[in-house]
Image 1 (tube, helix red, strand yellow):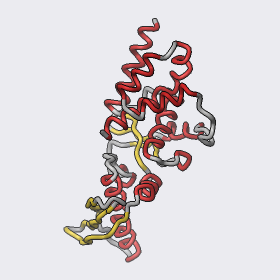
Image 2 (image 1 turned 90 degrees about the horizontal axis):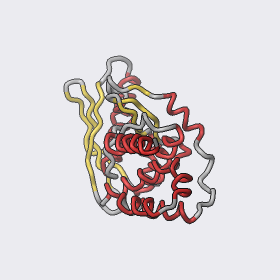
Image 3 (image 1 turned 180 degrees about the horizontal axis):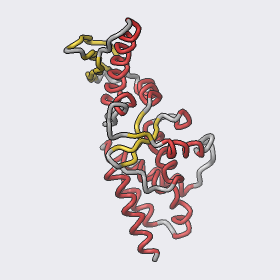
Image 4 (image 1 turned 90 degrees about the vertical axis):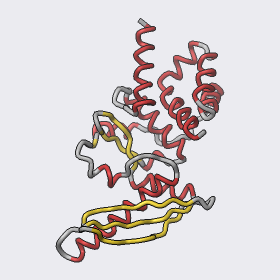
Length: 229
């Protein structure tokens, strides 16, 4: 029975890490994954920088405005407008991002030009600029997510407020002390999946049982570390 349960959990974790589907995680595991994702990027999870969305049948995280705002501050990213034009009724704003190391990236935001009052048209201009800034921010920091404004345009996407509500159960702070086993797990995860698996393999059953509910967040950290190599 335990072997079957272990196999089931392994299949679920594969679904999370390979397919990006969070739907089969428990609420605690989803919260752990959420916090691990935030920590790996240096984001403050208390600001709820991500929300859940169902896209193409898979439950995923998507970044909100708070994500790109914090990432620009953390990575020292500055943005300048390169071009603005209207082509066949589409507003296209092109921007360039430069990080603190001097790396640059260029991206654009496009929205339809509405008819109506000048205020309506000016709001569309600002929306195109906002979309461009968020897209280039995610691009220059190496994240392949759709930003919040793009999600709105995908017909197959739907918000998952019932899962977002789970975020109310996130702990109020991260100040609780960690024991040595937790420190070892986090350190191993930051070196990649192979290191994490080695530490997990050498751990006694009692510690494994205690840390099992938090395994998703360590695997998320390890995956992020492997992808950064």
